[in-house]
Image (cartoon, rainbow, N blue to C red; front, top):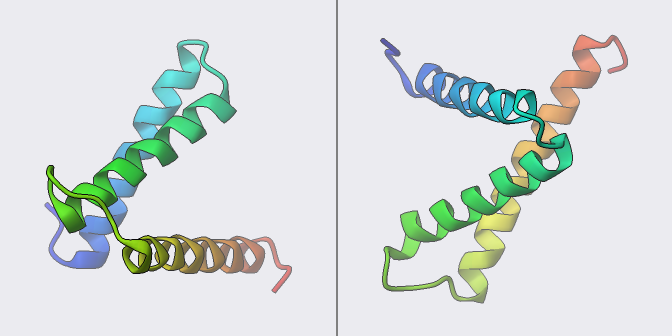
Length: 86
């Protein structure tokens, strides 16, 4: 069992990737699965902030977008480092 936030985060990430991989193994395109995963994440991010009855105001949307951007930049920097391109 994961003992801290980083471990829990990695465990959740791995589960989502495993699920996405099963979808592509069933014949769905990687692009379609990626888009659906992003849509699901948008729905869940909105729920996490506003619950079932609300939506995000423009500043809330900006916060979610900034979080996605920060995560994507961190991942790309890590991938470049692992590939020896840092």
